Structure formats: C-alpha cells, structure tokens
Image (cartoon, rainbow, N blue to C red; front, side):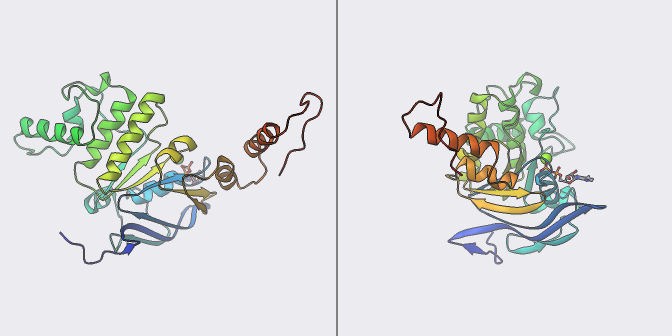
Length: 280
Ligand SMILES: Nc1ncnc2c1ncn2[C@@H]1O[C@H](COP(=O)(O)OP(=O)(O)O)[C@@H](O)[C@H]1O
Ligand SMILES: [Mg+2]
C-alpha cells in the first residue's frame, strides 16, 4: 500500500518525527523539548547517562506514557499513542529490556504469545512455519523452535524477542539495551541481527550505553542529557566527543585519559620523571 503522506529526506522515508516532546512526572521534568527523526532503513542510537530520559522516550513511543506536550508524526501523519496496542497497530514495535518472554514455553509459542493465528483452533503447523521463516530471514542461530526459551542463551532470547516484534510487520522497532546482558559473541550476533532488521527497511531506535556497540551499528547517534537533546553524531565520532555530550563536560576522566595517552604516544621522553602537560 502506498503512503500518500510520506515525507522523504534525501530519498529516505521519514518514519518518525518528534517535535518538542516534553514529559513531566509531577514536578520532575523527565523530557524537555525533544526533537527526533528516524528514517526507513536507519539505526538511530539513543544514548545518555542514567536518568537522561531514554526509557521515558521509549515508553512514550510504545504508548505506555503520554507526552505532556509536543507532537508525534508517524509515516507522515500526526498520531496520538494512547496505549501500547495503538502504537503496535500503527507499526511501532518495542522490545523492552526485560524481553517479556515465557521461560517454560517454546520459541514458537513465545513468538506468537497472545497473537495465535487462529485463537479458536491454534494452527500449530502454520505458526511453526511462520516462526522458522522469520528466524531464517534474520539468519538467527536457533536450532529448534520447539526448545523452551529457558534453555536458550541471552543472545538467542534477544533474537526471539526481536522476531516476535517483527510478526506484525512494524515500520519502526524500539530496542531498549539489546546487548546489555550479553557476552562478546552474543553481542556480535545481536548487532548482526539489528543490521538485518535495518536491511528489511525498518527504522530502528536502539537505546544503549555501550559506545562500542553503538558505533558498530548506528547510522546516527542521538545524545540526551538531563531530558534534553544534547547533540547528534555520526558513528565515527570519537569517544571523547560522545562522552562530553553525554556528561556535559569537555573535561572529564575519559577525555583526560584519551588526551594523556595521545600526548604520551607522540613523545619519546622519560615519562617516569617528566609527565607531558595534558592537552585540553
Ligand atoms: N514513572 C515515573 N515517575 C516519576 N519519575 C520518573 C518516572 N519515570 C522516569 N522518571 C524520572 O525521569 C527521569 C528520566 O528517567 P529515565 O527515562 O528512566 O532515564 P534513563 O532511561 O535515560 O535512565 C529520571 O529523573 C527519572 O527519575
Ligand atoms: Mg532507562
């Protein structure tokens, strides 16, 4: 179906556009005046320190919280995300950090949880076929879809949760800390998976505090600080630039370390007795 309201930037569909989004919880301003755009086939990393407002923003997009002010445009149309089913129905899928999987159920049951193809007479065969199709499209490393989720690795669980979120063919997928609990190999697996989701033409918002993961997969990095926009960066931004935007300080322990190592690396001299002055 063609979308007559479609807005394009440099040839790419603008899937989501937030303007002036604020959210107050009583006297607490969790978000102030947030602008954010996400395009089809783009991974936007949302980064920021604890309390920066990342989860609040994800919950607003998932329809869990309503903004106090501001506008949300989805696929060219102004929308109100009253509740999670409205967001999902429009094509915004969310994988929350806790994944919300049922340990004792198998992969197929988890992918179809609450959305069984035929609620009156479950069609196990078509559900299994659809589950395999989804997982194959994602080149997921899952050997049996009849395995209970309890026996899967953290990376495989994240894969199941992402496959589940793709079932309703969303246009935008929100991932809250998808690699937070994972080891190196599983992280790589999930980052590959995120790239495949992007290659399907979805917009992806990935919340993360791991700069390495963010740089590996993001097309743009959006920094929030104290509930406000604090810069948009390309993935080749330096650690120093990102940390400064995240913490709001040009001078911090991370930038001091980086600058010290740079200075030391560039000078051959007795570093035991003479420490080169730190460049700011
Ligand atoms: N339900 C809530 N009630 C009151 N304050 C909240 C609520 N959710 C978040 N906050 C506050 O909003 C701010 C942003 O929080 P959050 O979005 O969780 O940040 P992040 O995910 O970036 O760590 C924090 O000051 C937090 O205490
Ligand atoms: Mg959070």
